[in-house]
Every structure is written in C-alpha cells, then in structure tokens.
Image 1: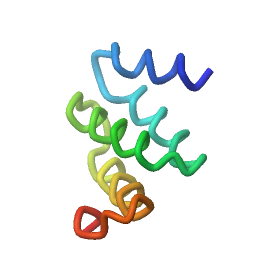
Image 2: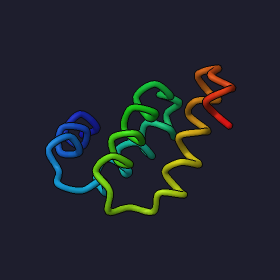
Image 3: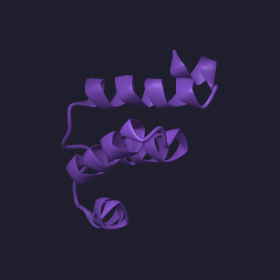
Image 4: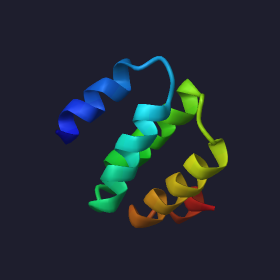
Length: 70
C-alpha cells in the first residue's frame, strides 16, 4: 500500500499525496524517503509549506543532516 501511495504521489498534480506519503515514511523512521517526499510535496505545491518544511527538518535531523535540519 505504501508503494502505491508513493507512486500516486509522484504522478499527482499537487503535493497533497506526496505530503501524506512523506508523513507515513516519517512515522516509520524512513527518513531518507520522507525527506525526498517532503521535497516533492513542496515542489508540487498545494500544501501548507510550513508543515512540510518543519517535517522535512525532522527527517533531515533523523538522517544526521543537522545543518539542513535548521
């Protein structure tokens, strides 16, 4: 199901599905996938950018990318 969600996120016109998929990845500590999907959501738009940026920071922190997490 997660793979289907990621596939839908990549083909979606806006970032809503990517944000949802990123949240799922973050909840399972898949920080690299979460960071990629949050970036995708931000690039596609149609979402609350502040939420996506905050969660992208959390994912980067989990990856040990402390400078990017700021």
